[in-house]
Length: 502
Image 1 (cartoon, rainbow, N blue to C red):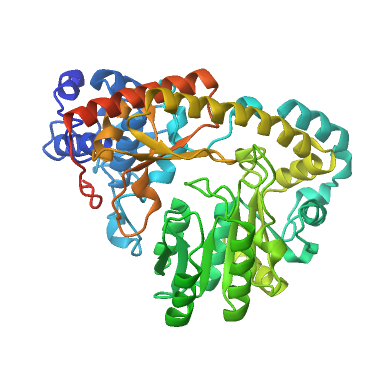
Image 2 (spheres, rainbow, N blue to C red):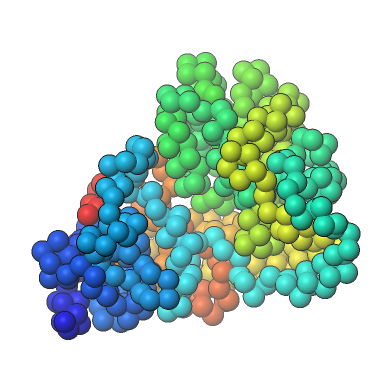
């Protein structure tokens, strides 16, 4: 069967409200269901399919993933992707898995994190989407040399099962490391986790029950929104502002008695804002009075480009109610998947109980590597280097935005972190912009991803960390051209909620 004619005949369009990957998945699903693509048919690889349809590989990858989730296709290691054959006892084809799974939280943005992580693998695309450090900056040679020098420090027993709380020498090293930034803790107040996302998941699991109230900033980190909504939390939002709305916050505390507050006070994701020292102190005073638990998520505070950030909320904590989540993913190596939680010992004990049900303990080797990086000053030296390099990239993106998007975008220059938060001046469809950007081989994250309840947004988030200055300028040039075209055509915004799925 000549599958090329079938594929080329598929009709997808950037003028449609649904994302391209959803349209493609729907078209392929229809061909599978009417047997135009019979069971057992081998489908083209993602890259080849992308070339056939003149779309990005990210789009085809996301489409195949969606079809796999629906049980219509399956990937076979080393062989390719096939339409499911229900006559064979395959994992996806022989059982009605969707009917057996427990109820799952789903939203139009439910798979966006996975898609963002996959996006950099599309080599043709300039991805300004995922918050990824540049792999060319990873200090792999220094780590290899230092680890080789120190490898005899780790006994064979260390490579077996270790405490769920984490490798004790690493917890000691982190306690000493964070003390220089004003946050005092003992090793038994620290839990090593498999990335800050696990720290957030465990904390939500330990504290939140269905219908519990939680306070977040609006906009805020997509992963936090998903974790809280999946747990059944009712989310109260603080408005987008340069200053914390303490009056509204206190009203929430009195009226709803929320279980906790989630915040990224330093170089916030997505806005890049920094909570002022006055606001931090006022927040701690209010939290002390109402015994409010605060989750302080802090991936970016050491990535400052002008001056160090204000002290963390944890370092100002006078009542023991701040749960601090740190990570090495943005500052060193995302692939180590290692972060930590600093909190009162009863909290650490409860989180360790939750963690042992998930993975017993985080990866030993990653913990050894991080211990070496801290004690041999590799982390400190690396931070000095990347602060300088990322500042150049931030400045390059700022220059490009002022050159190519002056008439279409408003933004503030962040003093640290990875992102520039852009507000589009004209009433265009951000969904349409995203579709056209994919065709032009440039990616960003739409602002809707960072709000709860499908709130409409005319904003986009751009990451300047992953690519060099020239690629950043080219990516912004492409976005600028698209914005001018859409603004000239006066295309109106699309509704925010309810992207159709197959």
